[in-house]
Image (cartoon, rainbow, N blue to C red; front, side, top):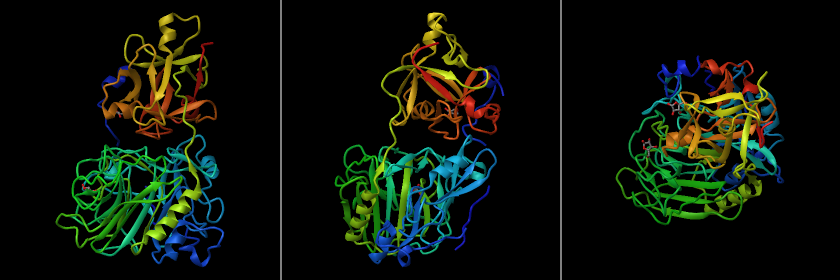
Length: 520
Ligand code: AHR
Ligand code: AHR
């Protein structure tokens, strides 16, 4: 039962010369809990075990999936010194103790390095290695998810999901007990139904052990998104489909199956099961109600899927061949040995709905015009300002006596984020239709060109200020980076890194802003 964790300047003038690199370079306390389970507390994996289809992988950053589990849920690594910390449930069988994580990560940022397998099989998920496609990190590895980018609440307690942005991925190519060949299995996941894209492939489940496309039928994973390239369901998506390799299937037809509806529940239960010439797709609202069966029948009408040739690796957030273009958010999921009965799955859904997942409050998006004041040492009275002569974003002294055009240039409206409506985009009041976006890791004000890249570069998730004061704006596509006041201009900066403006000195204060509705 091994656990493998893979350890692992300027001003604007100078920047013009820079070619922009798109990306740069404990032992388990409890395995399968039925022997220890108390009748009062049950997790999804206790229910699967009672149904005769026990979990052989159980992953969650939000809660224990067994009533008796009190081992580590996930590991975070902080940017400031590279130290790691295992987050445990607050009590046996309970939700994650994120207060301890927040204390460990205070004043810096953390990524999720390991999502531990709670089933006792040692099937931990770690940073995915390169395969048919390479990830953006050194050696072709995928990115790790920011540890606070997907906050949610369980019964009023803050927890964090795993936010996958393109380039992020987790994998285990050396598993134990996962279905192979044509063996039957069940899979469920709780996802954010509002976070998705068309990129390949936001998956959770069974995949190839060599990270390459090994042909039809060599994987079987839950897919969620609106990729229409292989298969699709009703309307515009997103859909729950089954990634069976070289095909995202929504039913028996390799193309469209209208019985697989578009589903966008904020918390979405997604299930895919697969056995001998039999498979199913089920889904429902993870906050309430029952599961629906969107497909149950024979394998897709295409060569190579019957019998299946499953290899038994586990992926999260990527395709079988390490395709790294997907977006999505994962809260919890498990894989079973054996094809679960519908009754078992319905009981799992009841457990999930009883968990009471809720979303955090939506940030300021009511059209209020704000001034964003810097809070770094000596920066009081200086505001984030669209340069009146070029596309730069400056940090300069502005008061209610400044020239009218300067005051206007310091005004922003927080609109729903162009790439994620639960976050914000900062529209320049002086330049309607132009938003603050980063380019080459520097903030600019540019007209919205409606590309996906622009939307991503112009979307920031407001967080409690990194210094404990005000608000910090976290880049949606580079979540370790925040809008920072650095030497009179605004950049996207991480707390330590390869850019001059990643300087950890004053990072927390420089990346915290006060939102004012009037100038002093
Ligand atoms: O089946 C869809 C995708 O096709 C798989 O995830 C990937 O391995 C291949 O590119
Ligand atoms: O700012 C970093 C990256 O630079 C942006 O994501 C991209 O638009 C540009 O290449």
